Image 1: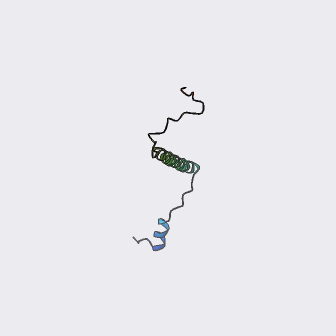
Image 2: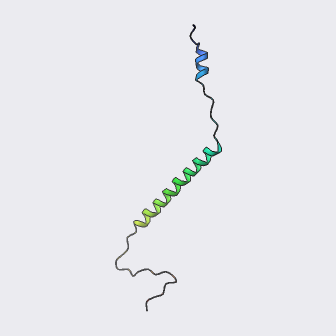
Image 3: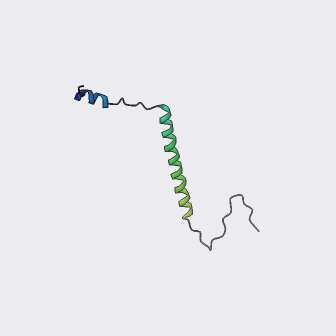
Length: 69
């Protein structure tokens, strides 16, 4: 029995490159958008939480709020 030659071994180790499918691309895009949205939401929440209100300021009313007069 003869051992495989060098050219036979290197030919067997080469793999056919896989093509990117549409499903893989859509899943990767959805994951990226989800991570982006989570990062932006977390950043906005942290920025909002870092605002300290002054105890001496009056309560803020909306534009259409009825003033208690």
